[in-house]
Amino acid sequence: MTDHGQTQVPLLSIDDLSVTFSTSAGELEAVRQASLTANRGETVALVGESGSGKSVTALSVLGLLPYPRASHPGGSIRFEGEELLGASEQTLMQVRGDRIGMIFQEPMTSLNPLHLVEKQISETLILHKGLSDDQASQRALELLQLVRIRDPERQLRAWPHQLSGGQRQRVMIAMALANEPDLLIADEPTTAVDVTTQAQILRLLKDLQDTLGMAVLLITHDLGVVEKTCDRVYVMQAGRIVEHGHTRAVFASPEHPYTRELIASEPAGRREPDRREGAAVMSGHNIRVWFPIRRGVFQRTIGHVKAVDGISLSLRPGRTVGVVGESGSGKTTLALALLRLVRSRGQIEFLGASIQGLHSRQLKDLRRELQVVFQDPYGSLSPRLSVSQIVAEGLAAHRIGDEASREQQVITALEEVGLDAASRHRYPHEFSGGQRQRIALARAIIMKPAVVVLDEPTSALDRSVQAQMIDLLVKLQQDHQLAYLFISHDLKVVRALSDEIIVMRAGKVVEQGLAEKVFSQPRDAYTRALISAALELEVLDESVVSQ
Image 1 (cartoon, rainbow, N blue to C red):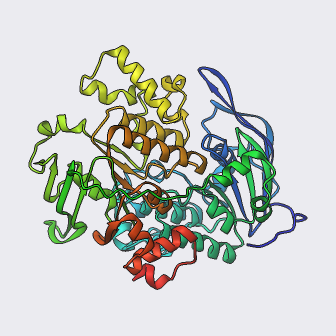
Image 2 (image 1 turned 120 degrees about the vertical axis):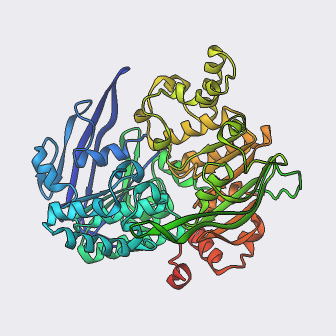
Image 3 (image 1 turned 180 degrees about the vertical axis):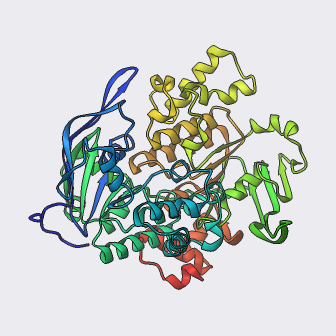
């Protein structure tokens, strides 16, 4: 990190910015007289809880808020001295994607599902740089190589839904960096990626920053990343900047009580070992999910992508199996195979009975017992339904209770996940990313299932809420003897929740065993690299990560 003087003219200057949203309940003040600056070559962090106004502030810079529902009662946003607040659409179009790049928090909703990755990266190069189609395609490939996405030639021809969460995030980073912007706004750029990828992306951004003199405005809830990578930090609470200063000074001596609360809320601790060998509620033996690779006019199969290749595991009541690994390692595909949401080979049993050969109608009653919280809560929540309708959807589908009892169960479930039950009549787009994740969790736990698959359930949550969510998951598990399959790239959270760990790489298991043993005595070099990156945020040995 570099100590930058404050006498230079800031590249970005936000002064007394206020943002108000018009809602059915009246005017909502999302941002209240917020001020911050970012200089060339500097990394500035904006931190705070979900819903504190961080992303709204960032979106205001590029004029991306939903106008006229959103308005700016006051304030100024200047970029290189040019006022952007209230600027014409033509001016903003020239700035977006060229002089200012942005990495959005939810890559799946930001990427066009109807276009290949190649087209989405190329179009900004054609628009702003005037490159030909061939030149843009070649540059798009170089950008995917730059962000170290595996098999970039193949991923260039992929659709967004064919990529893992981490791979989609890397595509978003490639798009944001395509035109070598002067300012990069990064809204939770490492939320959806594993720890080794996180270290690589942060190092990549730092290298590009040094080369281009680029300023970075980092919006994040990961204080570990802030402490290690940022020059200055602004702390936001309920739309206001409550503290700011040089990162080392703020972390060493936080002045505001809210800042102290955030710093003290980093996940810690480990799961007490549970060696009970109860009967498995669900098990899989030699599970394989291979996707064919087809080429030529007749689309002949010339090979397979072995997303899951011969994995066995058992889920027991009251216990958690944690699955970790890099983006694209097959973690989510394994979960989908267990839930019978993708075709697989091998044996899958629930309560001792095989479910591998069951058809969709036969699986319907089983769905109540098998619930899932997906990685992307916005994509899995219908924008046409209210929160109450979303959470009660499973109850209605399985005809559980009458309308009045369902309403009461919705209220209870929302309160259990830390949401105000009075918000149940609102819609998903009115909530922050972290709040939407809690809605998805409420929808799963309201069914009182036997097995819950948790696919990155805390990745969108700020640190101050993660501990609450971990406690909630543990309590629900103890109260109802739930079996969890917990997928995460956050090893601190995995350690706090899991009894057993499975480490995956390229579809295979590289290490499997009791959590305490895997963390204290990892056998595989890849596992050691993951743990080192997660618990110490050390600069990884590239030979270990890429071998």
